[in-house]
Image (cartoon, rainbow, N blue to C red; front, side):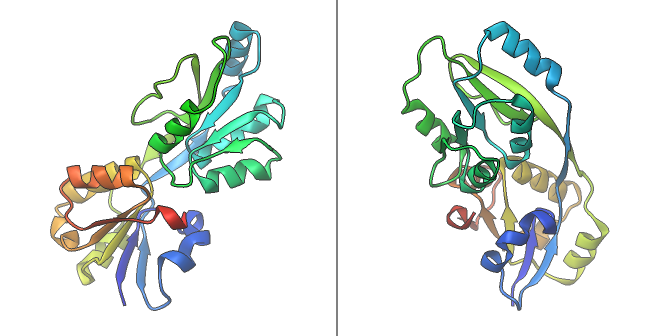
Length: 227
């Protein structure tokens, strides 16, 4: 039996549970942030009027941004670059046919795919994203449209405090770079480092795993192949 912390809500992780944990594992969920959709219609109208054409391709780096496709009123054959296969699946469920995504999730792998395609100088990309991102995408003619906001849960939940009072963590599942940063600071601010010192920090991608090394974690792995 392993003591496992999943840094995400149980609802958002439900489809992965059979691959992440065993029936005998002792598991706790700790959502690190909440997502709130916002009205982006005026900003989208401004971009469209400025460009006088629809985007040649749309970039989606989070499942949280997929819903925004409903509002754009674009062709189902528009090129959609998605950050990973689960995001691509959500896009496909909306009826889009021309979806491109890396086999291993991650923004660097996504950028590599985008750069393999030829676009004319007059074309532009529309990047659907949240209000908080690690860095902008280094692409020409990129128009960014913020479609959701992220509110961080800065306090450690009572449930997690009680869990850590009784168990030493064996594994922590981290689903994004932002989640890793929030988790690190929550643990530091609440002096809980000794509770995870031997835990395997299991990250969604090599990119996030590299960040985990920077934060000083010693036991790191990835689970990109099952997401």
